[in-house]
Length: 500
Ligand SMILES: [Zn+2]
Image (cartoon, rainbow, N blue to C red; front, side):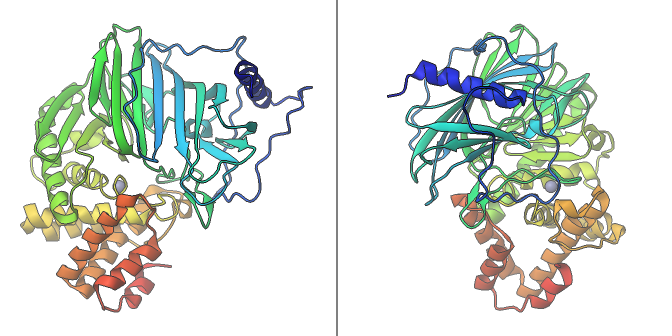
């Protein structure tokens, strides 16, 4: 039987030794990564983030919130519990994260990685402690690139559930980034550690950041998030990717099932607009200059949600936040998206602008990203080409007179070139990447539709989306095989024209 206190102490020490990157008399093995685990890196990994200073004592979680009892979770999905204290003045997050993970593969798993997106940049992530739950024997952990690899002996068995609890601090960097702050907002996207998907043929799916595009692949998880403000009486508006479950004394509780990630935006200035119907609630967070656009934005998103429900079937998400943000362009998360304030500033009163196109586009990502799972780094076309084509589908229904305008404005005016199935590592700049993946992607989908006919094409899209329900990752091979089942059309010439 393990002496849990001694055990905990030992692993805290192990972490500190590893993170201090120094030798020590402790007999723990050197940090290694077992070679049979495949990582799908396509570029040189970015700098390892190793904290320079060590905490003097065993850190104690500092959340102001008294945790709610967990609802029963009978699924085999990962459950992620985040206790977060946001120090508004210091722009830091103090986090206690508990992950409950079930090995749903047929293989023995060790090591198991924790992907830590902020650790791709030095100085943002500082691990303070990590403890395994009962019934597991953690023999070593190693920080490599932006992952922590957890070595279990014996390995984690199929159907075995393990628990990991980690304490860490995040320093939110300044700048208009999806994890960063400006003078009027703090954005928290891709900020929490997670266990990536495990592909039976390839191993752990971990991608490195690229010069363009998104790179993280999140499996579904249930989330419980307790966010507490420090000090608690701050007058801040919080946009979240799930509805608020409970609020008390500066603390905000969210509980949501089967989402890819949990995303927030915080500002003292947001104006909030809300719209609901039977299938979804949309909340829009605008800076004061665009407060008058909130209702228009919510109504447009509701209309897009209904259109995609008709085309692709129900999406059980039923909630979406739209956040005006100090970022370049837009960024989708599960249950929330950021959209650059430029799109709000530049919109006219007509549907002929990027503001309208991108509200529709980002809403479509709740199906092609949220619902259907794909490798965003290596096959970004599977969500981006489809989300772009969704703009056209929306305009066909709501603005049929603007279909030609859409093709000219959105696609032909850029004379796009490049392979639709490019990766994010194939480009150093956004414009040629978008031209190839998004715009030629839309041309590719139109060519498929012309070849197969409207009925077969719409049946195909419906089936493709609904297949996402099991959270098995969809790839190009699956796309082509499914297309084969709904149409006898010869698509080989189209594939050779658009793919490399
Ligand atoms: Zn997109």
